Image (cartoon, rainbow, N blue to C red; front, side, top):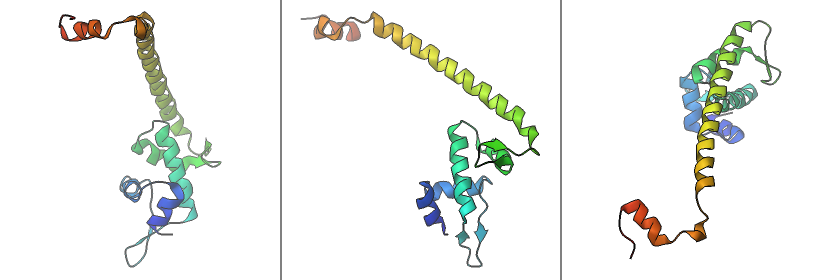
Length: 136
């Protein structure tokens, strides 16, 4: 299949598929005419790439990980245990980001909880607080 068909099958833009190729994530067969030729395995590969990107992995890590994926992307081949420390590091990075987001949410919750109901604040008083103007 050509790149447009792969794009339709995966929901990934042609431009992004070319980027995946530049990053070494996809290696399509090249016809003598120069056209890229993709196969069913490439559809699975693109889906794995999307899943791993959504998990927060960068393209360098994904390029190393893709050859090790087995079971429709649900596990690593026994010959690839060296990837586990990288995956643990990525998981720790994500856990840290989740903790940071939870702290940010707690700050917003505090502000929201301390804010009086909308109907109890006069619009002119709000304007005065934000602009320094005096209410009329």
